Structures are given as C-alpha cells and as structure tokens.
Image 1 (cartoon, one colour):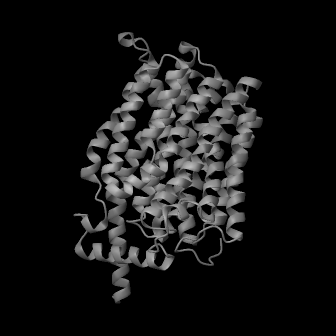
Image 2 (image 1 turned 60 degrees about the vertical axis):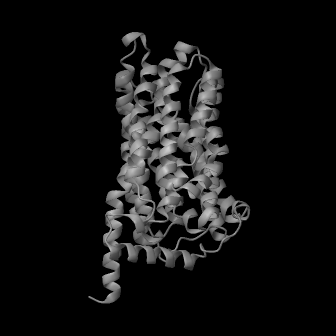
Image 3 (image 1 turned 90 degrees about the vertical axis):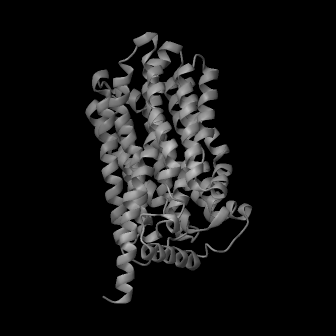
Length: 440
C-alpha cells in the first residue's frame, strides 16, 4: 500500500472511532436539550388552560427563551474556548436541567417569561460549542455527515417528545401535581445525568483521546492542522473584526430565516395538529411522524452533499422543499391527513438545511475569533427562534387559525436558501475545504 493510501486508511480509522465515541454522546446531550424545547408545546396543552395563558402569552414565553440564548451566546462560546469544551458543556447541561425543572413552579405569565429567559441563558453556547468542538476533531470533507448525525437529535427528540410527553401528561393529578408540572420535573433528569458524565466522556482534542492509537492521533491532527493552514484559520484577527466581517454577518442572516420556520413549527405543532382534528390520544404519535422522517432525510441529504462535494444547491433544494411543505400545510391547516403529510415534507426540508449550513462557519477562523463567530451566527439566527413562535401566537390570536403563521414560517425557510445562493454568487459565503467544482 502506498504511503498516501496508508495515511488515508489510518485517518479513516480515526474518524470512524470519532463517529462511534464522540457523536453518540454529543447526540444524547442534544436530545436532552431538545426534549425540553419540544416539551413546552405539549405542556401548553394543559398549562395554558390551567393558568389562563392566551396564545400570545404562550408564544412570547416560548420565544423569549431565544433572547436569553442570543444575549449570552458569544460570551458562553468564548468561555468554552478558554476553559475547554468538556467542562463548559457539562456546566451548560447542569444549569439548564435545574432551570427546566423550576418551570414546574410557574404560576403567572411573569414567572413563565422569567424562567424561559433564564433557560435560554443557561443553554447559551451549547450548539455552537459543539460545532466549534467538532472542527478540532473532523476535517471539513467529512464534517457534514457527522454534523447531520449529531443534529438528528433535533427531529429525534421532537419525535420522542410526542409519545413521552403525552404519557407523562397522563400523570395529571398524581400526588396533587398537574401533568404539565410532571413533564417539567421528569424530562430534565437525563440532562442532569449526562452533564455529570460529560467531563469523563469527552476528551478535549484528538491528542488526549485514549481510544485513538498514536498513529491515528498523528494523522488526524496533521490533517486538521493542514486544513487550518490552507483555509487561513491560523490567522488571528481580533474577535471584534471576525464578528463584523461580511461572511459572518451574511451567515447570521441566512440562519435567521430557517430558525423562524424550525421553531414556529416545533413549539406549536401539538396545537396545529389538535386544531386540524387529530385526536388527543394520537397527538404524540402524529407529532413523531414528521420528525422521524426528517431525521432520516437530513442524514441522507447530508451524505449526498458530502459525496457530490457540493453545498449551495443542496441547501437551496432543501429550503425549497421546506417552503413547499409548510406552505401547503398553511393552506390545508384544517385537514388532518394533508396537514400531517405537508408538515412532514416541511420539517424534512427545514432540518436538511441545518447540517449543510453548519459546514460553512467552522472553516473560517480558529481560536477565540472562530468560537465567537460561530456563536454570533447561531445567536443572530436564533432570534428567528423568538420571531417564529411569537408571530405564530399573535396571528393565531388575531385570526383564530395557523395559516398566517405557517406562511411566515415557510417564507423564512425559503429566504435562507435564496440568501445563501446570493451570498455565494457574490463570493461572500465561505467555502469549506472540500468543495470544488463538482457538479450537483
């Protein structure tokens, strides 16, 4: 075997181990985060009527999470860069589990808003921290499929949240505790356990991973260093300059649109399906269908993107699929079968955008500037996570239905695809290291 072939084989072996050792644990951590995000929509089925919350109160509370999240995103990721990913990710998980459990104490809108805001503060930095962490483990050419595997936590947790949440809600009245309160007590428990285990299970870099051989550590480290040198990541602009650069600002705006569509649906889907006429006993399983399909779809589409060596058209195609699905669901919001099929397409397209999108930021910069840039993109984008649910609640209160809100969500996803293509054509979109002139 030639030397280059031998090196590639060793690197491939190292990446297989990374995929088997790191990704499952990171995936479980993200499932814990999204179980809480998805469960608020199910809690609302009982909580809103018991506490007298209107659609706009719930929509504001659901979305205000992202204000705390966005304000503390960049400081959190800079802290992660300073103290190390394992310790900081563990801290994030433990604090969000404690705040999520405190949601069971909500009695008035002010409590709801405050705890949702604090939950965002607690979770700030988790997702961009993982993306930044993976850029020190996985070369860009293989990153989309592993990021996609990690991000299947989003649809998986949303799918699991349906049956699990409806089962927990059935505890309503046990020991004098409401079902929605049981939901907030039980669902943070996995996050507590994972947070305690994170430091032991996540090595900071390949160099300290005991499950990699010496040769595998060397090959993987050399490949990552060569990639950083080739892409200019070893340059050290100031954090401020990196945060205000055109590629970072452009990526932030791109992410804003898709997050409107993602969270407008995730936070409202139990109520969307309930109004469409799906029975309460079937609601959890109905919610599971779109997100189970989305998990498979995002992995397949990301692998296709890696194999073809192309990002922009794959992202645009996924965004168009998300737009079509959500737009159809808006027009047929009162039909259970059409609503279920259309939201399945919409959720699959929307989620397929995410892992392809996140191959871009991690290739731009290293060090604190890179950590800050990834965090800012996620922070600005997640303002869409506030806008989407809040707009859905306002429009629902004014019109009595979900048509207007779903159209806003659909347009947000489409704008991400269009804006990404425009930035790429103007050479403001960073290219990842593997991408060349491959045809779609």
